[in-house]
Length: 178
Image (tube, rainbow, N blue to C red; front, side):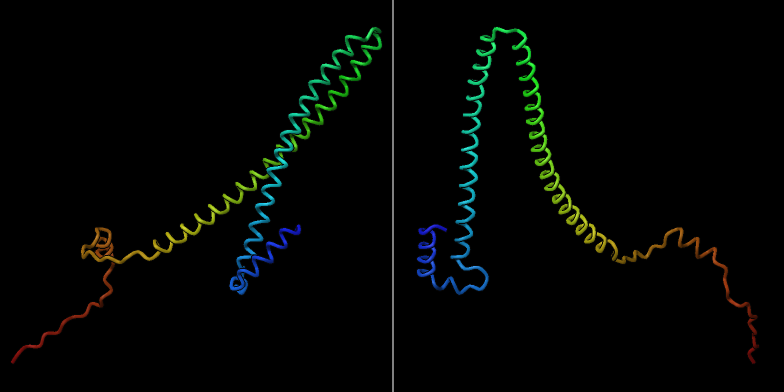
């Protein structure tokens, strides 16, 4: 932290003593975190600007150098020397292009890995939400309300008719009345 940040932090803590008594996070702590995040954002944005400007500058330099190469090739007088020079340049250009392609591929792979990781987290979150919902639905479905309509189904009636009666056959004795 530079001098001004330390001084402003101390002033904030002196001006707001009641907020320092919070157990979890007092305002100065949250403010410090906010300022750190803001500072990091500024650093990243600045580095992106610097990179963008540097890329533009390098592209301009590349074009200038390309023109100078063309001029040098036009000035060359010995054909054998020129052929050898061109072959060396082509070899170096191929190696450079392979290196650039490798870097681009590595950047793409890194970006794809980040995307896959983010999507994996999202899928896990959705799966857990879906599982929670299905658990809620299964508990709701497992206890269906019992409704007695008073009407027996045909299957119930048939099953009652087909059951053998296990009642013992006893004779009824009639006693005459006197």
